[in-house]
Image (cartoon, rainbow, N blue to C red; front, side, top):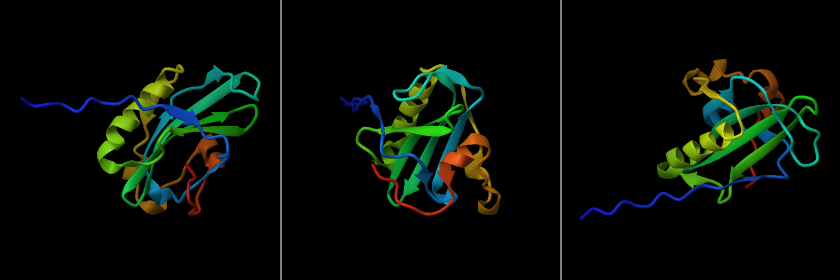
Length: 142
């Protein structure tokens, strides 16, 4: 008899200390972006239109899945990460799918940006995410 490992539901939690995601663009393995804005209310901010992003940040043998919301009116970003932080590359697909479901449960429709297919010199984060994601190398706290 073959036993299948029961998949654990990944809980995403707000990373309240993280205000900007300071990573080198080369470390962003995948990037999904919302096709439109959704009005949301986050603690400490008035209800407003938001954009959503889902990305994988590679750091050695582990990968951090990040959900980023850009609040249009406040020009601020709010980040959610898995409760247990970085995961081994063998687990990233499940965690990324949970992040995808988390974002879509808030009313967003995500599209793959093909960001990971661009050559390094062509990787440019556009629009609102550009204000949230810096292009210099820094450790992402978890």
